[in-house]
Amino acid sequence: MIELLDFGTSGIVKTLSRHLLCVLGHWTDFSNVQTIIDEVSSGFTLDLEYSRLEPDNRMNYAFKASLDTNNPTIRGNEWRKISSHKAVAYILSPAIKKSEAEQISATALQLVAELLQAGGTAAKSESAGLAHGRDQRLDLSKQYARAKASGDFHTASATLYRAWVQRAIHDPDTNSLYSVGMHLLGHRDVDLNDDRDVSEAVKWIDLMIHCLWEIGATHSEFIEQLLGLDNQSKLEHYWGDGLSRRRATVARLLKKVSTPKAKPRNAKGARPKITPLFLPGDCLLYQRTNGRYVPLLFWDVERCNGVHYLLAVPHLSRVEDPELIKRYFSRPETLSDVELSQFFTSKKRFKTIAVKDKVMKAHRASFFRYAQRSFPPSDWKNSMIGNPAETLDSFEQLLNGSGSRSVSQLEIEQMKSNGLF
Image (cartoon, rainbow, N blue to C red; front, side, top):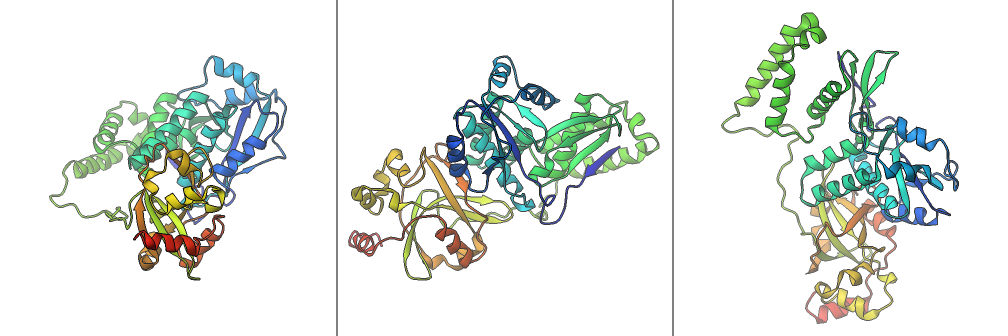
């Protein structure tokens, strides 16, 4: 029997569901950890009540108990680093709304990678009971970044699945094997009876979640998995009297998907093609309702609970060189990555705010493009502040919290004299 475990189908995925991350390291204080958390996402918090600046002798056992049941990735020297840790940091994500689950999980993956590269030695998810090796965590973060940069949403989602979902946990009291962690991604977990080995259970769990979430597998791979499972002799043992009915259902499904329509109609919820109002790297000025102008750098278009635009807000007050500011408003394409990063936090990282497509379109006349400063998204990182703005008022509230000053009248006059505005 396969059962779907529903962790909540309303706006909230289990009201208080959060990522709880455990990161080991050699820190002598948590100042660097706190700085990284603040830079990656203001919504994540360091839990100082349980974090400690001393070794915890339970960690070896805890990490062994949380190994990936299907493919353990902590090996050799990584165990020695776990044993020799000097500090334990516990970090909480924001409460997870269903519409924001994947974005928060992606930020959690980025945050773990940043901490592992800044003195961290190992990390595990307390929320899913899953520990990956340091190299595996860093590799998953890189895979996700590449997939997002190339627009490969399926691979991006599949990477989050591997990062945060533990599969085939055995519960002898209920004679079941189940997954844990899909609630962190806004979806249901899967439970099945334990009269099969773990490797086969993992295949069933993966297949069911592929069906429910549409991640990773291509159309042909999905059909091959269905055929492979249907041909197993053990199915009669699993399904008993229901075997013939279930096989007939699978046969009808395979027949339907193997003969595509001459002109397929759009599936419910299919993503329509859109023509972005701006391109990544466009330098913009936004005229606020009070008449003042704010500089923006267009980062990307994202699809998560609709279409929204990600905008980086340059911090003009951070830059002490007036000539650098002048170049940003005249020839931003001449700025090097190091020079451009002075307008943001550090290390080629943007903090972005998001605004819904409908808001951008309704107020298109308030956005002025004056230049283009191309940059490879794979070389830069972004973390989103708050939720996507659904009204002009909420967009301006996000701008208020960005910490940047408005463009001065002198800077506006200089742009006009250069024919840019």
